Length: 334
Length: 175
Image (cartoon, rainbow over the protein chains, first blue to last red):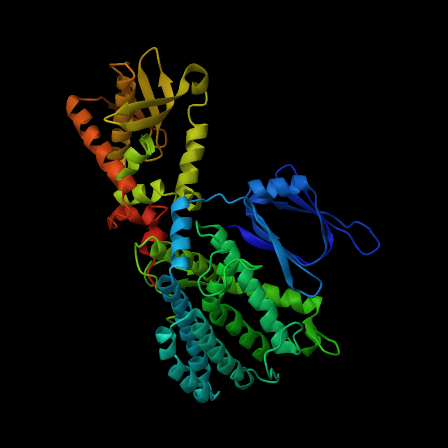
């Protein structure tokens, strides 16, 4: 089973025969004991600490189809090393482009993303409403907005509806989460613990979607809801809309309410709040465990991991754009 | 677009798989079975590569370009050897082998036989080409060419073998 490796410590990574060798290096430049990672066990690498590597390593990673995602000191996602596309299909790229450039086809896919996101958001709210947290106001408001998704005439209108839904949804965060206040959603930099967790995990979700897209024939720059290719792999942003409520938000609720993450796990500055290294490790561990949890899939009759759900979503999109089967967004059924 | 041995084989297993494959939707990299088969191909009969040659062939029939890559061809005895992992899709393997015999025939090499080898089952099957088979292959390549040019993906075959196919999740994922 391949898995993700998260590198928090600074150090040097190199190729040693068919293994990866990680040598931690501390602030004074002293080398620690190296760790060897067999290459077959690596799905991808997430690097949070500063990493030294040479082109021989990247050639090797490229050959093995291993991507490396980079994050800066402030936990922002800064970019990825993606191996050469190995699944190219001219047919799929042309069909994907057609679905983008035809405005009604584009709108139809984009509204499915919001439909899926709204459904999964309501699922979360209802779950807590049944557990002594009164989120009925938000449930009603979002339920009333839902018909506007399918009747939207433009992407802008759709984005507006999406923004309203999300705003209402975030208002419920203070009801759901004990002991912490979120207030309004702030990014760049996040102002408190909840905002810090949302920013960090949203980015992890985006990166995950990007990784999954890379293992299909879809082109990550051609998106339907978000503006394509502008600075980001925007198809990953599209897909993450559907999965954020299920993966990110549920994890935040449980991490804070079960006190797995506490105030002391954050670094509070004058106008910002970021995870400390130790807190970050806990969050990443919980995130990784979450992704490897399995559910029995309804139409496949197989156990699949949460992570795999995203790849299955890509398959559905491929079928939609090739006119094989209409796309239905993922809706949590449990 | 040319028709090759892989497409002949896929077509006999599932036309949808053939259509997806021909349009660049490849799933083989996700399949343990495919990897296993590749490994088997590389490790079985390790002495053989010295004696036999891997050959690439091409021909044109009714304006349809045909190509094929034969694993091992024994030119002296005129025998094609094809190594397969399991005999689950034996009929499809036979048509692939017959296609190669036909390709050799179209290149003026008659009277060739093929042996399908299943090292894991420790069995093998001999395959010969009849005039009826040539008729069938002629029809097949025409159908394959139509499918390659068609924008419509064939339906799922909904068969027992779907469960072990590398395209299973793509085909059967719904919501």
